[in-house]
Length: 279
Image (tube, rainbow, N blue to C red; front, side):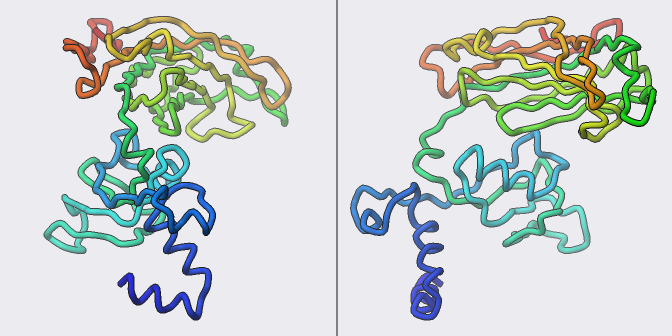
């Protein structure tokens, strides 16, 4: 296949740039391309991140390109859920709207930077509940409006998760747990509360940013926290967002990365009151 593409470069010069991107990585000039300094990328199979289960292929594609320096080429469907094939199969150039499953794997080109990168560990995020003052809920450019339900969006390093909607808009209890891979010591968790399910200027109810550095530290020890974080930002009518969200966080270090033995005892349990706890 490579020889055919090389021949086609005679007719289409743009193919040369594509070939260069496929067999090497980094921002190099044409002169650097032939030098030994350029290191080739590596074709590998990587599992679909847990936070992308149920999301579309284009969302994962954009995340891998922008955050992980990984170029997806195709998808391996280990457990078919349709009538396409009773056996596992490979999809080249998947449809952007293809829904991903936890059993899927991605064929991708990994750059030397992405191959050398080892995750510090995982952050387990439990969004337990929130307190939203009635005044903070009455906002709309067209007049007073009180949402019929609220939800919470969690984001970390380009990965996102979202709670179900709760009809108790003043004291919502979500008890929702998500898990994210942490690659940066100074990473953050962003929490956004919205009216309904979609995040727009009109549905925005407040946002909070939680730094992870105190939990991650040197990445060797497991640490957890349980706290209320204040919401900030402004509604579409200019009013200041108010309220607070209760978050339980637990950093679980990567055992393969740690040089010393770390005993990991993190577990998610539901307490007697029905809340989600990290112990």
